[in-house]
Length: 104
Image 1 (cartoon, rainbow, N blue to C red):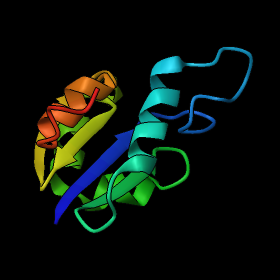
Image 2: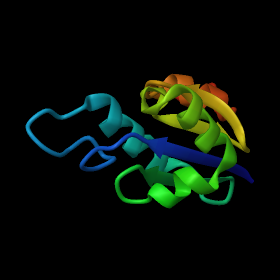
Image 3: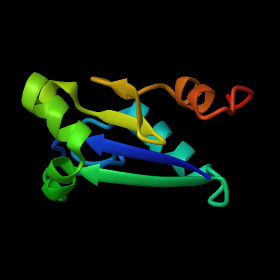
Image 4: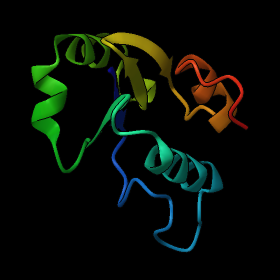
């Protein structure tokens, strides 16, 4: 089973459907994450404002934030390897990293 951990920047919600500006990239990402097979993927998502302890307890996340600041967020880890930072990947980019290259 692959483990995907996402550390979001401070925002009102991770879906992108809050406020007046809907972030379509976040909406597509949330939809894609919901379609992943739970037998093959474990997905955890953490919000800076709602779960700050997760950012401290993960030594690599804490190191990145201490050295480079919150502008590095979001952080995407696949099996504890950093695969994306500073921006949300597109669904094709993420699916390729997850070994689902044929997903579009």
